[in-house]
Every structure is written in structure tokens, then in C-alpha cells.
Amino acid sequence: MAALTGFTSWVGVLAGCAALAALSLTTLYSYLLFHTLAELFSIIIASGVFFMAWNSRPYHKNGYLLFIGIAYLFVALFDVLHTMAYKGMDVFPGFDDNNLPPQIWLVARYMEALALLFAPLFFRRRVFPAVTFGCFLTISLVALLAIFHWKVFPDCFLPGVGLTSFKIVSEYAIMAILVVATALLLRNKDRFEPDVLRLLILSILATIATEFCFTLYVHLYAPSNLLGHLFKIVSFWFMYQAIIVTGLTKPYDLLLRDLQLEIEERKKAEQVRENVERIIRHDIKSPLIGLQSMAKLAFEDKLNDEFRALLPGLMRGVRNVIGLLDSTEKIHQMEKGTYAPQAVRFDLLEVMHDVEASLAPLTKARQVRLVHSWDSGPAMAQEASLLSGEQFLVEIMLTNLVKNAVEASPKGGQVTVSWHIENNRLRIDIHNQGAIPEAVRDTFFEKFATADKSYGTGLGTYSARLIARAHGGDISFTTSQAEGTTVTVTLPCPKASD
Image (cartoon, rainbow, N blue to C red):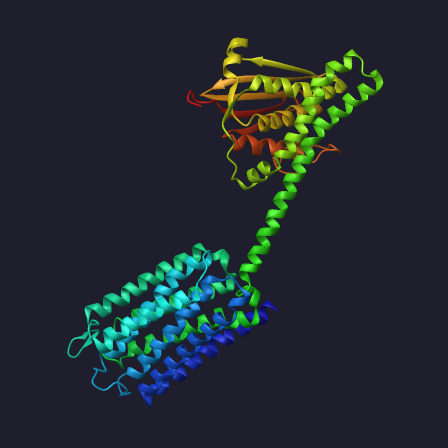
């Protein structure tokens, strides 16, 4: 099938070259006939682009296509005037038939080039058809008055001189505009199917070749003029394939491309929200397990004094569940990279106390000791433990990491949380005696990476890294069978002004 497609493509290219060669032969009979046929080809296609864009506008939000369509209608009108003004047609007596055609030509080409330049602006903006029509109509009327009535439009061809500097400079200016238009198309390449983008760029490149040819001719029937019109035919053929053929045979590739993109964006948004919901469900497990344990104690101990001592932990667990539910949108924004935490100073030692209390049932069940250490002693710990950010999010992060460390520790083992200040950044090392399995080391912080835990979702370390990075920090780890595992969190220390 691929070979057949390649064969038919080459057949199409050869057929096109044969058609151009046959059209060129008409110059042997009459150059005027060749010019009229070449211009009619582009006029018909430009009009077709307009009708395609205009009549399909209720079904798409493609401002680029509608803007180009309206512009090409006016380009077609000026190409009609250019054809009628050409030397030998004698439609406009009293005007220099060597100078008038290139004047009208320049207006059409400037209009086409500028339309291609500004059209990418309407990928994300609405096109108002009445305003757009009004702008192009105003420009057209001013140009026509400057050429036919006021006669102030600069000369483009003078007898005995040939092309004027204005004409040559204008052609190069048009080429420069088209180069920028191509760059803008490439910057917005996601807005087109690859085949449509390729055809549009080929159309613009052929137009650039056309304009270059029209900087070289010495009279209107010169070979470079002939070559320029052949390139123009090629340019409009590519535009025909990109807009008209694609719009009719593959409407989803052109007319409904925006709808496709919108559907894809919604799918991505739904996936992000689903991931966030999984993260929240994962993080809610810990406080719910704690609440379950406390409820069991309450049932067994029948509300004695020991249970009353557990009431602060019960309230803390309830607060954590409510906080997790409230943080859903924040995690969603973190996944998209758009969340900025509210900078509020808090005491990290208090946070760690809450983390330790919430994980007490787990550490007791696994007989794991949780130990803290500071480089510079308790006094320095108290001073350096002040952080700036969102306390509850940091608590979620540390709860996930310490919980993972406790679960990975052997029975009767120890988890050490140590604190260090380096270059105005706080480093928190969470060490346990277990080693991370090699199978998950490369994906340890990715979604759904879990170390053989039947109840695990692989979201704890993922959400922890989201939170750390949202606070201007990061998370890394080292692991080995001999040394165990150390997960390192770095966070910026608050400035004195915070």
C-alpha cells in the first residue's frame, strides 16, 4: 500500500509537470493566452478558498482559515484586474499597459503576504467577518483610488528603464514577509495536521519563488515572467490541496481540527483530574487508618482515660481528611505546573510532630522507631525549622515519605529523619534500612511506580515531588543493600523579609 501511494504521488508530480509544460507551449501561439489561463487558475482557486472557508464557518472555530478565506477573495479580485490590465488586453485605455499590471500585481501580493503573516494571530482570537471584510475593502478602495484616480501609486515599470527600485524592493519585502509567515506557521504547527502544514508551507515557498522571478524580467513577456507565473500556479495548487481538497475529503484534518484539539485537551484534563483523585485517595488512606485504629481502641477500651488522651489525634485525623479533600484543586494545578503556594511561615518541627503522631499506629504495628537529629543541636533546630509555604501540603509530603520509609523498614528497625542547613536551603534526609527494588529505581518518583506493595498505588512519592517542586525544592534518593535508602528533600529557607 505504501509503495502504491508513493507510485501515485510520483504519477501526480509527473502529470503536473506535463500540464505546466503544455501550458508553457501556449506562449508559442500567444503569451497573452498563457497569462490569462495562468491567472484564471489562481483566481478560481483563491475564490474556492474563500467559499470553503466562508460556508464552513458554522462548523469550525478556525479563525486562521476564515481570515485567509476573506483575504483570498480580495486577492482574487485584484488578480482579475491584473489579468484585464495586462499588456494586449486593452481594457483600460489611457493607462500604461507596461506599468499598470505590475502595480495591481503588487497590491494583490502585498495583500496575500500580509494575510498569511497575520492569519496565525487568529488561531486563538475570534475573527469578526464584518470587520475583516471592512478592513480589506477599505485597503482595496484606497489602493484602487491611488492607482486609477489619484494616480499616486509609485511606478513599477518605466520604458527604457525596466523595473523600478520600488518594484524590486517591494518584491523582496514581500518575500521577507512570507518567510516570517512561514516561521509563524511552524510555531503553530500543532494547529494543523502534518500534511496540511506541509502543503501550506510549500505554497508559501512557491510564492517566494514567484516573487523572486518578478525581480528579474525586463519586459512583460520575458522568460522570467513566464517562470514566475508557473511558480504561481504551483503555489495556488498547493493551497488548493491544503484547503479545498483536505476540507472536502478529510474535514477533520482542517475544518474540525480545532474540535479535535479541544477533545484532546479535554482528555488530557480528565486524565490529570483522575490522577489527582488517585493521589488524594492515596493520601487519605493514612489518616483513615489512624482513625480506624483509634475507633478500635475506643470500642475495646470503652471510652476510658487512655482513649480520651487519643482524642487530639482523632481530631487531627479528621482535620487531615478535610484538608486532603480541600487540596484536590491544588494538586491538579501542580500537575499542570501552574500552582504557586501561599507563602506563610510555619514551624517544621510542629509539622513533624503531627506526622509522627499520625503514623504512630503504623510505627507501633511494625515496631519501627522514628528518630530525629539536627546537625547543630536543638537550639539551632528551633531557629532553622521555620519554613515559608503551605503547611498542610508540606505535611502531606513528609507523611508520604516517612510512611514509605516505615513500611520499607524491617520489623524492629529504625527510620531516621535528619535536618541540615546548606547554602540557605534546608535538607531533610529520611533514612531507612531497606533498599528500593532495582525494578522501580528509575521510576521511583513517577506515577504508579510501587515497590511490590499489593495495596500501593505508586502515587506517594509522585505527589511528594509535586509538592516539593511547587515550594521551590526537590526530592532525590540514594539506595543500596548495604546502606539502605535515604530520600532527600531540599527546601528553600525563608528570607528575613518573608
